[in-house]
Length: 296
Image: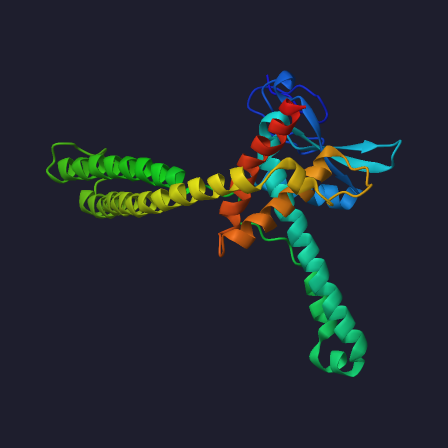
């Protein structure tokens, strides 16, 4: 029976969303042992919750810490890495948009007459109101190639079977029900549809081949970056001067550390795809800091 991970209510089979809080239901509460990922004010955490849910994270929930007066966002350990990467993108985008909005406001304050003439007030509103754009969690080319290839074969099989069936109908080997007397119209419509499936399948397979070549390049680049990181990035170097005397939660340390690791890598390797770099750092982060814990 499905359960709500936030309200902890049980639902009948077939239900997918909690009617009280809107959270996606899960099969078992035992599967969703969640831990706090980040905290903040209510509005920001609610925006982040919607953002993560939109990106197909299923164990996201918000809880109020009445003692500290903040709201905490929880996520399961299974989705923690994916959630952390998406959260960083969300925070970076919000920070960028806030900076752009402040810039527009300062310009409007310096030129109040120009604002009235050019409608800067509307621009400020749009800068604050624009939603964060997110292209989704980065997916490596090898996985994309595999998905395109499997989808292509599936479309070709469905299209091929459909075209054969249309041919049999046209030859009166398969007879349509009496209600569908116009077999020519049926054959034309269904033939075009299945032919489209077949063509889409061919295009997907061609696309998978180009992605395979890109995957080889990404694999070589990943090995090169990893070798450089093994020689140049250590936990001590990353943490050096990063926290000063601040007492930060482990989640906040994670964001600061990954940002610094990103800067260190970008100085050595230019023009890296941002999604590729974020994915690499999230994968490599445990190798740096779990190794440190093991040595201690």
